[in-house]
Amino acid sequence: MTTARRPLVAVALPSEHGGWSLTLEPAILGLLVAPSAAGVALGAAALVAFVARTPVKLALVDWWRRRRLARTVLAERVAAVEIAVLVALLATAIATAHAAFWLPLAIATPLVAVELWYDVRSRSRRLVPELAGTIGIGAVAAAIILAGGGEAGDAAGAWCVIAARAVAAIPFVRLQLRRAKGGGERGASDDAWQIGSVVLVGAGLVAGVVPVAGFVAIAVLAMFHAVAARRPVPGVPVIGAQQVVLGLGVVLATALGLRAP
Figure (cartoon, rainbow, N blue to C red):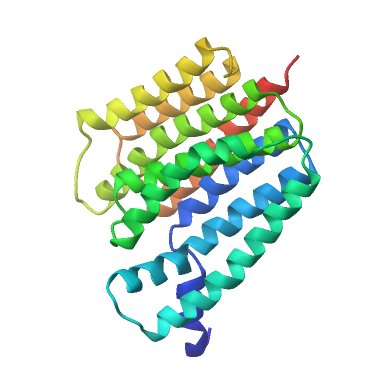
């Protein structure tokens, strides 16, 4: 990589490696339940939105601090291109959707706004914005299902599982990263997040929107986290790989449950 390209990479590509998986999981779940061209466009739009957050965040931080640097100009240009692509993908989804899909995206808007507010103040690494952003992007699963002609109950169930996955995974990963750096040990609140994820998906099960397979998958995820938090912490790449595998397991189990007759 040349020196000239480094600023572009820093502006254009997210540094949150786990975010790629957490963004793709709801898109994959939605497409497995109700595949459609509009769903593919929405899934691609979610990925573009995740990537665009980096230049948008950098530009907003500089505006907030009333400064204009070389990276500000570069971030604005990159964000403009990516937002244009995002708009084109949304237009494609609107033109090809089997039904209206805006409601879950509208509901998720305040969550995304919370994340952006923390971004502006350079506090995006805190728990609140990470949870808000991940649960917000989970609305894509519901939107894809609706756009593909799926049932509203399935859309709600898919989003519920994705939200529970976020509640279980994000605090756990933060704990493991702290432990890997020698900065902290497990506390009662860490177990509380795992219990909360099961309670959340259990409420969806009782409401009749979450399939049994989705509930079991989240319960297994929470138990894995509870056990792993009590064992020696592995390397950071192992933590990431574990989350990718566990996330895909949750997605596949939930999709099979929602598609079952």
